[in-house]
Length: 365
Ligand SMILES: *Cc1c(COP(=O)(O)O)cnc(C)c1O
Image 1 (spheres, rainbow, N blue to C red):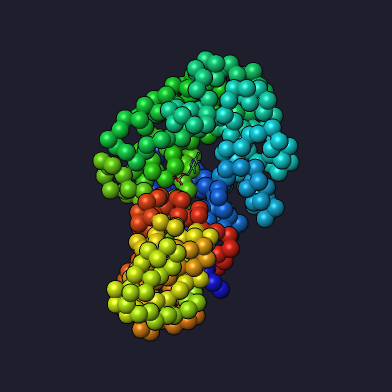
Image 2 (image 1 turned 30 degrees about the horizontal axis):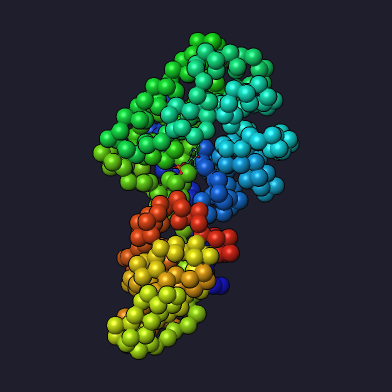
């Protein structure tokens, strides 16, 4: 194989349990966990991930759009599936046919929805959700006999404890909930928290359902002004690429597109069978590193579409056909998606979702 991911289903299970225990250990009411498996489970493979999560007892899964929900149903996932960002007119027949639960974003849509739904409140994120006044929300919900099963919101800055934005969002959300309850329209589920507000213990935002994505795959973003995250999760994937060629290049030789690297000494280079089309950020050219037999080796020259070159001078044992590690841990050193993202000037979410489908997914325990 040119390049492949090893996804540890054991780690996915462990991360799910860690989140479940973390939110339930200190709560005075049961809190359900709805893992987010959108974007092919952040690149880990939605079907395999959904299957182990269901097996672990997850009663809900969240996806972004109807197509992702239909994919899970066709793969035999029978639990509840929340479609968070797709209530387009052309999607509605499939929502019903496949028993998917929509998130409805506007009061216009509340009038039209004919299946149990979750209503999204824009409490300050400024993206999807209704910004209507509480009374207007109550009136719209009351006018539609179809059931309001959940009320949700999403935070913009939940890892930033120097900002009051999350507190303000919670206040707004609580105001809408209070009005619904006062009108006898209390929903079965109230949810607002993704990984950051789970990990950084914003307990007043946990409701009775939480929506972790990043944490399920083993990541928690760093926070500003917050205590250390209490949640222990571990990255579930490692990413390998095969050595296609080993070259000896003389001092002064240039490497790759644009000739942006010049060998300062005679060098041994290794050409890896993965490039930006596979998801290696182009920005890692002359900047990133990989792991060769438990040691770091620098990426030299530009990352090209299908190939990446490393300096293997200090790895005399490396040969054609060997695998090197783009992400993962080996011999006490590791590169995770957050570190790769930092080197590339992006975020771990983007690194994970950017791993192309042509990179084979291999599942291990
Ligand atoms: C993606 C998403 C999540 C999961 O966020 P993480 O930071 O990955 O935990 C939760 N809720 C909504 C609405 C989302 O779009």
